[in-house]
Image 1 (spheres, rainbow, N blue to C red):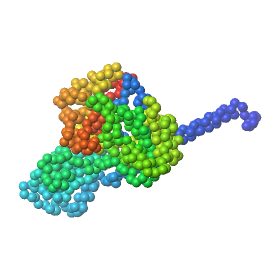
Image 2: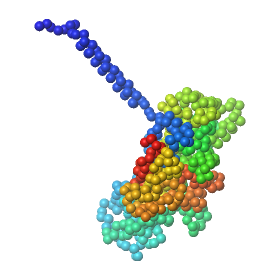
Image 3: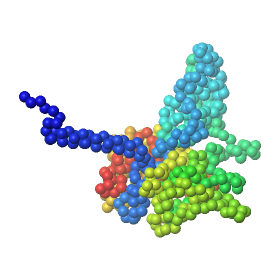
Image 4: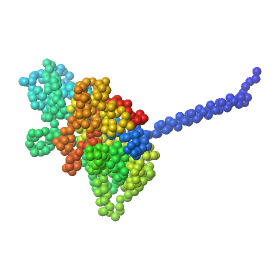
Length: 560
């Protein structure tokens, strides 16, 4: 028997071993490369669609199959994208919600560890209650926690007497659990109080939204005059601060670094197009560590106007929360910026250093080290070369993050949302019914019209929503009585049922008129869609057109 040695092993075995080692090395190297890419890669934007896909969407013809859906309007408070820094900077970042544990601690401080029945056990004549008794507030807090489970209660004011001896009016600030912003809203209600045999206070009945009129803040106008108003004035939201900030001195202006976009082809385009471009510019400013110059004047596309014409002269603050934008980003209003720029150049021989960028093909990365006071991007090319969002395409998409967390809907619109939801006691279901142009286009949506007919809706909703429930219908259907058949089974609510919230006697009307230099502001189609969207999101059960009511695809045939 001969001994084998490495030198005498068959060449085939050595070759197989060599190939195996080589393959294993390639595998390990591939895993390493993949791991590095996975760790370092960042998606260009929180939207589910890629930047090139959205570019195709915004530049296609009107007859294309893919059409932008304007019936649901998402902004930052709907996307849950707020970074740590933004939440930490919020005014009530450290505020603790009022929970059962918080109430128990307050109760222990008031009553002590001894028996509750031994403290103040006497009943006033006629069932009257002392609303200043801290136990009244504890009873109301517990009642609200049990009744309004979709609400986060943030703070209460001391109860005051109602219209009857056994009634107390209480005001509080709250936030809906489904809203991802830190904004507070206000309600005040009337409570009928009862005293049990153990001398504990209980809520026998509560009034509806804003029923506790004695707990509302006094009108500042009436307070100044020292008179009593016979007619209740609308509730003013003192937390809204959308004043235009000033840069201050010339020295402050000169110290700054600015990114200025001239108007481009985005002007008068649909709102989703505008936001995609606006957030590109704001994202570039953040990447360059510069202050973004914001033009508050907007052009609203014909899609949202009853006149079916583009309308200029709209104010950014009608639609979006300017105060929040100021808090989380560095912006300056265009008029203030141009005034300070002109004043500096007029009063000094040395002009402000400006770099003009005439094409979007100059990338943000190329401008990163530029020391000019002003980088002025100009968009004079023909469409679609003059769209702002082109700046964020290509390699720039890896570096520019659109700051969706900075863009919230207007607090004035959100107050309308809270009022509608509050009038339904936050206990409602909702259905989103898309009709309009899509229902008329049988080529792209062949079944939508029939599937959203009143009879079809009634039949389908029977299996989804219990009878006699509050049913809010968010829709672009223009005919108010279209959904009357559903009233036999549900308590139907439509946006037009709440028209007084933007009528000429409303706070929204008065406040927006001040922004518009004393001229009335129309409650336009974009505002309607924004309110519909937010009420829809607050429903306990939500039914969608393209997922629950029809088999048609949301974007047209063969796109599911």
